[in-house]
Image (cartoon, rainbow, N blue to C red; front, side, top):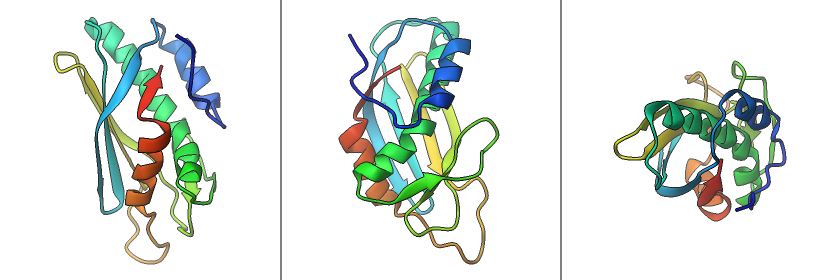
Length: 150
């Protein structure tokens, strides 16, 4: 199986994939929820994986999604440009918001064969900035990243 989904800015994913080895897995988006300033994505895999294999898969998936925010926003017809780094992860300035968004939370469950990720602002500001339309961004993820291969 080849990579079907191209990332415009894959650097963080490429670097993370080198440090989180393992067989690539197809992950399917099984749940998506836009609530306030946050978007939650839940991806499921099919293979039986050890904890270490699932941890590496989760690391690759997190890095992929952190990079995919740009492409999901553009796919949903939203403007997007690079924001300040969020640790080692990229952040993105989406739409007319002055607040960057990034991957801000994640985890995985080996038994349920899922990994979940939360996208949002690294810090919630109480005034100014405007919010990203997370529902619209969710449509970009559904369209472009309903399945990922990481």
